[in-house]
Amino acid sequence: FNVMLEDLDASSTWLLAGAGISLVGTLICAAGSLWYLSKPKFVIAMALAWAMLGVSIELRNPKQSIFAGYLDSQISAVQISAAFIATIIFTALIVRLIKGVIKERYQERVLELTKSQEEAQTEAAASADYVLA
Image (tube, rainbow, N blue to C red; front, side, top):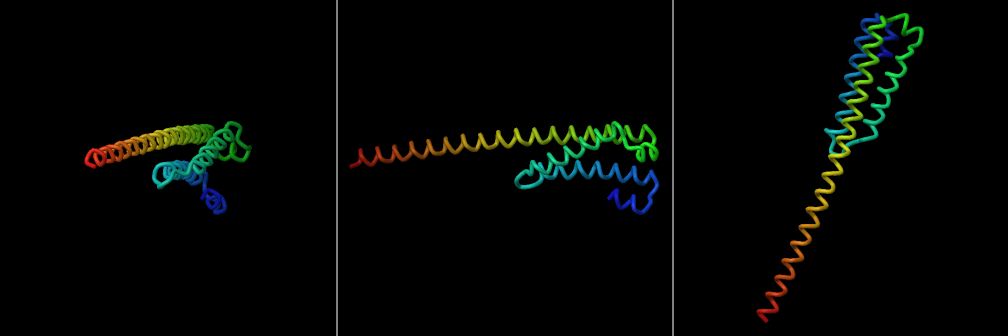
């Protein structure tokens, strides 16, 4: 999206707006890959978080072309936003991973209890058949 704006010789205001939209879009895609798919896609979220971290680190010492086209406050705002989004994605990734582990353990425990109950019922039925015979 931002490359297209750059090719159209958009003003720095439009490019900055495009950067903001891209940051929000990245966060939405990461959240969707973790929470709204039937099976979470951790790799997608990790790649997006890593990209946001890269943007934040790159903007600590921006290229001369970026430095010349934007105010220091604008560069800092995008840098901080990218770091914040990376932190949100990494945190969501960890929370989703923990949730998945807890859910899996819970399902294993329920399965164990169900099997135990079925075995107990089978043994009770066998005992009842023996007594009746």
